[in-house]
Image (cartoon, rainbow over all chains, first blue to last red; front, side, top):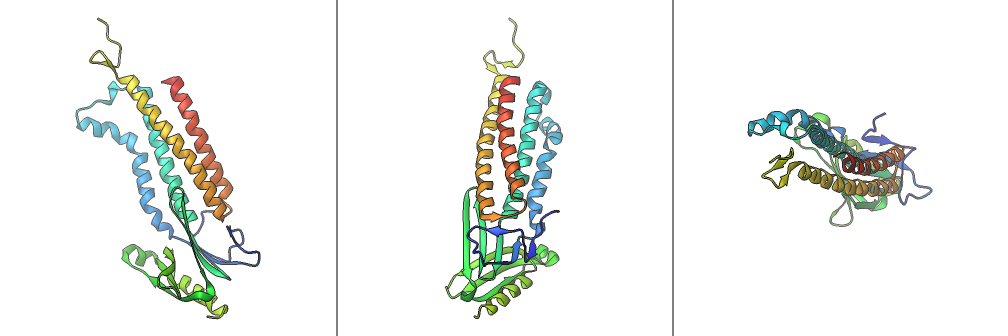
Length: 181
Length: 77
């Protein structure tokens, strides 16, 4: 089954540094519709080998001068590119998550290929959870950002483009109330 | 004088040039595929999920495939 964006009480997920008595209450990642950008790119690149002869002929170049095996090699490279776009797109979506446990809120971000950023806020330090929704897509598909504010001046944990941001903020505040803010 | 197919201006061999370009792209791709293997490893250690083994397998397959393609291109082209 295709992974979902909002999972309550997941039993088959764990994260690095999770305590033995720590349970995941909520796991959220960006709404699936946010993947549309790289999916469209993958579709365009997938069809490039079919469009290329027509495009280069506009510039007066004939692909017939290139041996067929080289054209085949370029097609393989094109499909490797499709594979990269799809794989990286999926990884970027699947592993960038925000997690609410019975002890803390975490935001795990992989900014680039090998850069990891984990923001953690203890529930007893949480002061408020703010939501913001904007844009046509956000309103149609009901997704937005959730920012968790602690006693520190800056926003500690920021979950981007998550589905049902109000529900996520509510769950965070409920969990924070249980630990006694 | 006979001119070999693909030879332009008597000295520039289009086929050799294309083979070089293809090999260069594939070498860069193999390096990138290796980085992706490390990336997947890092991600899977940070967040342990049901799909982690599958994603790792895809990353390793991708890297192996990229190395195989280099060998194939050297042999065939």
